[in-house]
Image (tube, rainbow, N blue to C red):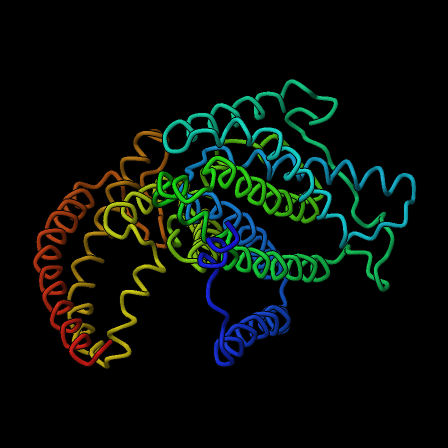
Length: 431
C-alpha cells in the first residue's frame, strides 16, 4: 500500500516550480494588502470581504464537485451551521469576557462544519452520483426547515445577532471598522486557499481525482472509494464552516437564509461558472458571481433571471467555465497565433451584442406587463430608458434578437474556423 501511495503522490517540485509556487502566494498576499489602499471606500471594502468569503466557500465546494465528482445540493448546511455556532460563540465569549480574540473565532465555525460533516457524511457518501445529490438535497431541506422550528437556537426568521467588538482586542483592534474586518477575511481567505491547494497536491487529493474518474479502479488498487469520499466531504465541511463563520462575523448576524437552497445554489453557480476543472476556477467564479450579483441587482429587478440564463449558457456552450475558456487560449498565446482569431472576435461581438440587447428589451417589457401592468410604461433597465408599451420597442426587440442571432450564427462559424487554423499553427510550433 505504501508503494502505491508513493506512486500516486506527485513528483517533488524543482527549484523553478518552488519559486513559482511561493511567488504566486506572496503576490496574492501583497495584492490583498494593497487593495484597501487603492479602493478605500466602505462599499469597496464590503465587496472585497464578500468576495473573500465567497472564494473560501466556492473552493470548499469544489473539493466535492471538481475534485471528487460529488454534486451536492446542500453544501450550505455546513456553511450555515458554522455561522450560527460562531454567533453563539461570540455572545458567550463576550458575555463571560473570555480571553479569546476574534481572529481565532472562525476556527469554531470550521470545527462545527467538520463535526456535522463527519456525522452526516458517512451515510451521504456511501453512494455517489444521483443518489448522493438526492441525499444532500434531503439533508439540506431537513436542516433548513429545522432552522424555522428550533427557534431557541436558530432565532426563527429574524436569526441570531451578536456584537463582535465585545471580544478581546487583538493588537488594539476591536474589529468595529470595516477595514479591520476586511483584513481578517483576507488573512483567512489566503490561509484557506493555500491549505486547499496543498490538499490537491497530496496523495489524498490525487485519490479524490481517481475516485471521481474511476472508482472501480481505485477499489481494485486497494482503496475504499467510500472512505476517500468521506474524508473529502469532511474537509469540504470544515472549510465551508470557516466561510460561514466569516460571513457571520462580517454581518454580525446568522439567519435561516444561511442554510437555504439559494445559498447552496449560489455556491454551485460560482464553482461551475468559474470552472470546476481548475483550482483557480472557483476563485474566478466567486469573484465574477459576487460582482455580477451586486451589479445586476442595481440595474434590474429580475437579476436572478439573467443569472439563470448565464448559467444555462455556460453549461451548454462553455462547460469548462470562464477559466476553461481562458485556458483554451494558452497555446495560441504561446504560439503567437492569437492575432489570427482576434479580428473574428470583434466581428462576432457586434451581432451578439445586438442579440443580447434585443433579448433584454423583450424580457424587461414582458416583466413590466407581468409584474406592474398598471404603472408607467416608461421604464429604465441597464441604464437604457424605453417605453414598454410602444409597438416600436417590441419590433426593435424582435428584430435585434432574431436578426442578431442569425448573423451571429454566421460569424460564430467564422470564429470556429479561424480558431482551428490558429490552433493548428500553434501545434505546429510545438505548443
